[in-house]
Image (tube, rainbow, N blue to C red; front, top):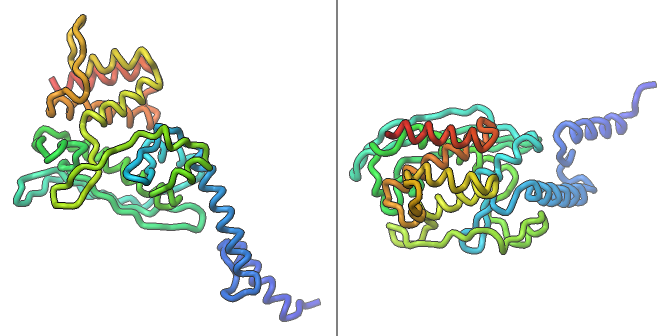
Length: 286
């Protein structure tokens, strides 16, 4: 027997709901309840995502907390997050009234279930990560592939944090996910060049942060790796990260960033492989 017209309407609504996961019709009697349910579920998903990270995967700027690249990478596989349609511009040399610099820009489409968002990110060799405070390192002393690698990882971090709403979190939100905000490293604010304020992590602080990550993986590797990267002579004390000359500190940081990315990508499986890779990086600079 043929279905009644009202039954056909109900079936149509159910089909649309199953395909999109959204409220089938604006103004439906249960629209508000459905939305409340979805929001509650999303809060639980968000807490579960935070629970997949570690304390060292976060940093604090002012009163807000931000997920580092290392933590963002941990969420790709378990969530099924995708980043497609990638388009890259650079690395290339640009020039303005301050001189020449390396520049890279990447765009792509981030997607998780029905959520879709275009993400665009760019990085230049004038980033404090490469040039230190005030951009004292010339672009000729910075390897373009390192600028490109940084743009790739930051673009992915930006996409993951945007699609999962993991930006500007509070201590309470982190705690619900099992992260103690009191143990998160604080990045102090420093005076910006154009008046206002901006958050700048010094070269020494960046080196110390990544070396802490190394130490967490292997206590013995920490000392050997740092001595190798800073060319410390046997039997003599090493120079502290915040006491390294700016050019040396930048070189050490570039090597550490390359090592950390290689480990994250699964290219380096153990401490011996990390040291061998570090020796190769140091050799290329000699």
